[in-house]
Amino acid sequence: MNIYPAIDLRKGAVVRLKYGDPDQQTVFGHDPAAVAEQWRDAGAKWLHVINLDGAFDEAGKANWAVLPSLTTESLVQFGGGIRTLADVERALKAGVMRVIFGTIAIEQPELIAQAVIEFGTERIVVGIDARDGRVKTRGWMTDTAVSPTELGKQMAAIGVRTINHTDISRDGVLAGANVASSSKLAQETGLDIVVSGGVASLDDVRRAKTAVGIEGIIIGRALYDGKVDLKEAMRAASV
Image 1 (cartoon, rainbow, N blue to C red):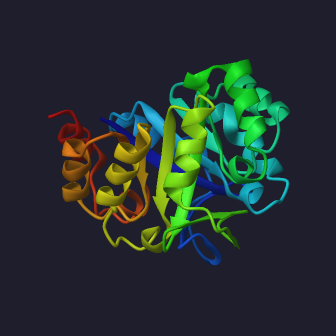
Image 2 (cartoon, rainbow, N blue to C red):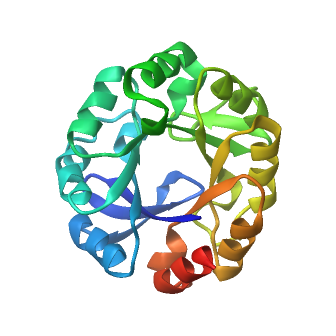
């Protein structure tokens, strides 16, 4: 199982948000490349990098500028404001291994299908971010009437294989990952799921490791607050 240390970027700084709320932001550093190096030194192969400015429909120019410095020695999955095939191409040219679509999966699913054909299944990931059983879009600020399972089945039908599944109610508050919900989504859709949101301890990693359909787990605030040691998490994921 893969471990994905999270690097969330806001105007070029590394931050964490509570519940995805931009008004509840904590800054953890102004040198994303140094943070990436820290996680690499602890053994991380992958990084989960999010352009929060893009997710909130802002330009995210500073975040795009630092992206190549994060991809030189790490496998990176990158998302936030990915709205067009040109955005995918731009990210891949910056060295990104996998590109994450979010909002567009709801608004323009045909574009996801096109991206899978053009860039390959292994390069395209869809983020399904939900609260109270409903998917949210536009940086988690907009509600939809779509359930994670409905969207997951639609994405599977057009060739998507991997989903980042976030329980927004747990994100950034160390409430414990909702592994059961992510595993249920995997079983209902046949997709490989990366668990996201609320990781608080190594117990979350161990539960994800033994759950059906879980490809990996994203760890954010727990790393930055020192609640989880990345080296220990890597060991727990490989046992």
